[in-house]
Image 1 (spheres, rainbow, N blue to C red):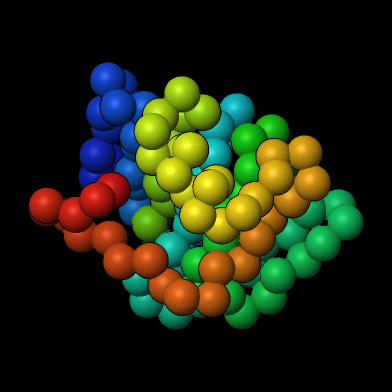
Image 2: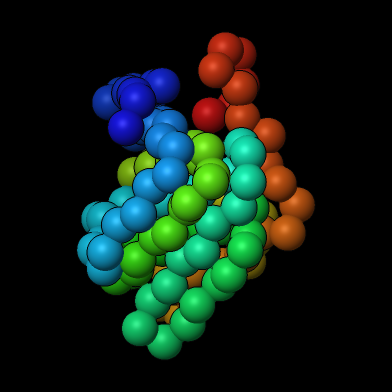
Length: 116
């Protein structure tokens, strides 16, 4: 994975990877995945989202990722971050209920000057 941004003080970490496949795992922080090119699939034990371009994965949610022919940005946001609270509020997401959520409108990211 290529590190694009690593801001400990803001609790925001951005990585980019192509053709990533990952077995079931979890992260202690919110993960936003955006396909820059192509699409991907993400699964939990209860749910699978196929051929999508953007999703939100809640903290501690066990998930697998399949991104063949996909270049994706992986944005990790700590729970104490203002960005985390803004995203959760804007989507009306409940930490306890929603493990992975497809976001229909692709969120734009940039390597310089973008929000993430």
